[in-house]
Amino acid sequence: MFVDIPQNVILMVVGAFLIGWLLSSISSSIGSRFRTTKRDPRDDRIRSLEAELRIAQSDGEKHREKAERLAEELAQAVSGNEKRDNVITHQQERIERLSMDLKESVMKTRELRNELSDRATENLRSEVKLREVETELEVAQASTDLIATGVLDYSLAPDAEEADEGADLLDEGEMTKAAH
Image (tube, rainbow, N blue to C red):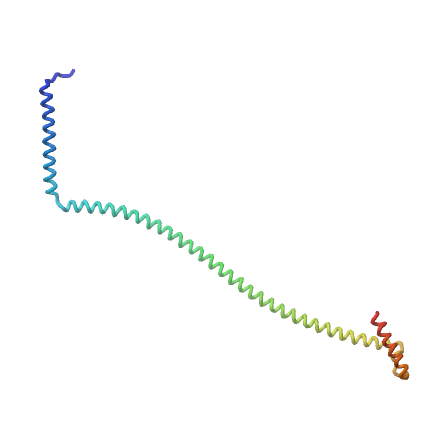
């Protein structure tokens, strides 16, 4: 199946291939030296600027993401502060209401104490007057009892001796009444 090819032809083909490869590598190295000397410096500048642009874009994207995260944190902090401010305002209003209620309660308590003190003074005065009236009533009752028994009859005024006995009877009558 294979065609018999003379060995000389194979060697010549391999040799030609090696010589071609050698010549192409030499020409490419010479050509690259020539191209590098011919390269425009603006191309290098463009390549460096493109590299800087890619770096700046990636840094910009990182900073944008960081700025978005910070903006979200700031929004959360602001909403948290607003909530705390609302709670503080509500608590201050409640404290003010309770303070007003406390002041009113203190004023009412003072008024009630004054009224209670006045009533206690009035009650004490009434008790003193009541005792005076009771004492007068007891004296009047004792006099009435003595008149009714005839011990205290001034028209029949006895002598001094009998007056002493009348006083003794009077004392006994008062003692009897006190016992009742």
